[in-house]
Length: 493
Image 1 (cartoon, helix red, strand yellow):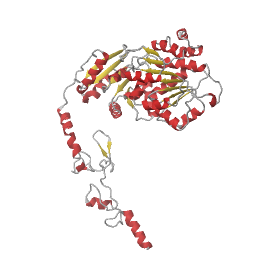
Image 2 (cartoon, helix red, strand yellow; image 1 turned 90 degrees about the horizontal axis):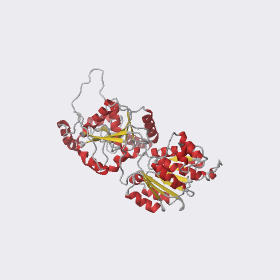
Image 3 (cartoon, one colour; image 1 turned 180 degrees about the vertical axis):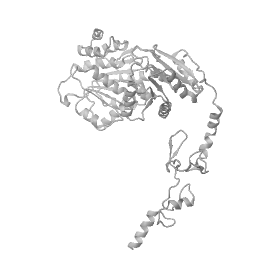
Image 4 (spheres, helix red, strand yellow; image 1 turned 135 degrees about the vertical axis):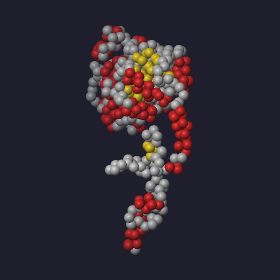
């Protein structure tokens, strides 16, 4: 079994590490990439997600560096010789873990740097010496600015998920990093999709590269993933999702939303409905993202709600279900999403909840795939016009916002009539300096009930309220601290 990897020219230490992981044979991208990288050639590789791209570059990279590895503990003997750039923290963590796993029998040191966590531990790790550095572009440039990393001796550069780095606007950061590297080096560009932008980047980066294209040029879905579409009204999506998870007894579901706020809201709504869920996106701290992913993998959480950027690079073994709660605007993102399931030979299921206004987005996805996706209509959740009550609420929404200025200091919909809360009970109070919108988000605080220092006037309150708020001993028309200051000056004079 390990002889198959050995047949690619890998060393005994690497084939032993591969055998420890239980891998039986190399994937097509590994069969093509490993020999080319061992020869020292530049590589432009495109393959579907879950086909082993990471091992495809990590194994030969380790072998090339091991030929001149230094066993000394001196940091000066361990300069950064290989740099691997990834677009997201999660992908960076997984790549570095793979490097450590495959290189555990080799005298090479690796470390990981990304944003969202403290920079000082990363600085200490770099000072101890690093052979292989896995990084996200932004945090790497932070270290460059602080002069805590030296890239002048890099021999191998890897751009992993290069298409996503371009989508996320990292091209300028990548160019700044390239300017810091030696002109003579080996360049490896791995991507889930093979777009014209990737070819343009490769033309300026790679020299006579070996072209490896396991996936079609226009990305295609995995044959191991079953796909279904459920037409449903936008306001019924959450109910349908909860129904599918509960009735199907789904234990592990990755759900994609379009926005970070939408991910938070959906996970909270599912939790209130009795379904354990958590969200992962760029606004969450790295410890919170790590915990959410760990809980999901361990089965403590049934539903992980994610945005496209945060989910890129997530490697969850045998993930059975992926749900597109919001249909992506870019058809290629659909392929990336459903590529989280059906990995490494296992089967999976991809569900898309399509509202009437998202039909055009679905048409774009079907054009990319070159076929229609099977549709299922679930009784009770059919897509149709909005209920009359919701339509009226939507139509009156602008008027409600327009009248907000005339209701400063009062919660929307609250009447001025006194409410009898019963003996011994106290009415619930909102914080005086905040207002809560209809979706539960805190809105900017108003000036209601605040004193204006120079005149003693208040905003949104009547005169008796102002008198009640004025501190005892203040002079009419003056703010209390000003009155105290004037009194002190008079006594001093």
